[in-house]
Length: 226
Image (tube, rainbow, N blue to C red; front, side, top):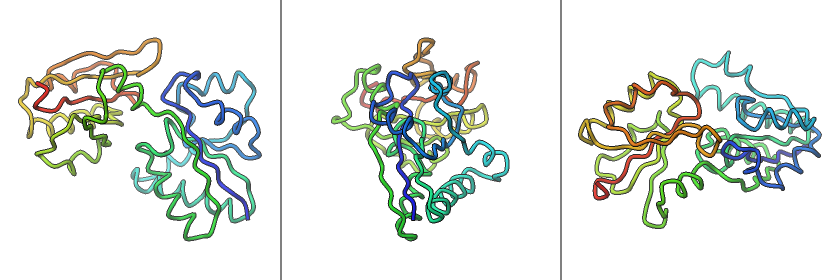
């Protein structure tokens, strides 16, 4: 029986990865990334650390739900076959990471040892940049899950994974059911990186931003903040 150790690559800049996670990557017998599309990857390659990724799974999966389940099940299968795996995900393993949610379930069912290590997520940088204290209340949600958000949600909202134009357009329309078209939101791109862009825009301009990609998030202030 093998083991799975889950680590986080941090929110973007290599320096924001924990020392513990870096040491685990260097020592890993099998190092697997959910995706190699992450700002730290080039630096990791430069330092000579070898890894494989699940990027090929993205090409085959018909939906993200199917994709995340396939990754989690493959990790458990490999551990059952005796592999000692270090599995690295973007950000923090316990913040907005659906493969880890599924991995916890599947590993428990299979009796596979699972060790999840803490890491820095985009949220810590977002709190600092926006000068908000999460103790006052904040909701973090994936853009694809926004329809599950209650209309009377009382807190500010951090929306992750606004990763392409269709998602941004759908999100804009969903938000317009709750907020005025000109409600001021904060568009965030490449958070914590040298070319970070964090700008206040009216809601109706969300899907008009030229750089929407997998590093795009949104902050929607609570109505009482307006």
